[in-house]
Length: 108
Image (cartoon, rainbow, N blue to C red; front, top):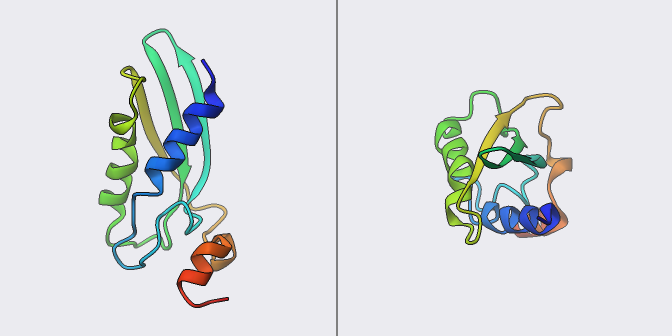
């Protein structure tokens, strides 16, 4: 099992999840802090550590659900469970955005 390949597939799927208020995917927006995968007796578990642009984000539940459902879209890993771990430390800031996201939003 190559967890690096699995993480790349998870990132591909996360790049399809958009914050509806900002036309940039959550990965390029810098909301994904870490992806950690481990082999468990009942399958593979990956924990995606993520944040939101603000604590009171009105779409927090839908974004977390979309991340949680990421595992369903990855072929070859039928026993994959993705759990989002929502944190607010360190807080999100525009510095966490990729250059691609900044360019897309006219910040570069």
